Length: 164
Image (cartoon, rainbow, N blue to C red; front, side, top):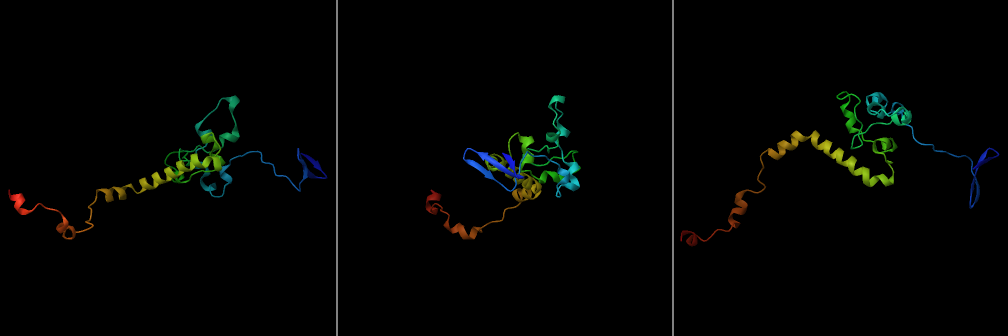
């Protein structure tokens, strides 16, 4: 690539192509405090720097700022009990990369990660209503049909056979 008259020109084996502008992606950086939806409680979210201290030569402040996620891609609390609602926020985008060591949020991760997220959400919803489920399972069961509807159709041995 080169600039020509202030415009980028891509040089390829198939020829040169001029563009009005170029967008260069250089990777991801995570700062939860600048995300509008997380800003009010970003300091409650557990980050990698809170959980893991690498050797000095392996320190990377960019990676340390990523969230430390649970197995269902959920945010975890920095201090247990202060923000229990975080378990209901699941991360299915590149910020999950450091927790899982693989790209997350793109087509190749669908088969691997969507079942984990769905399983965790399903489990949490079930457990949130556990008392109601237990009451239903252990409670009385209403008859679907009264005995008067099917009793005449139940086979019984003839009375003279039963007496013998």
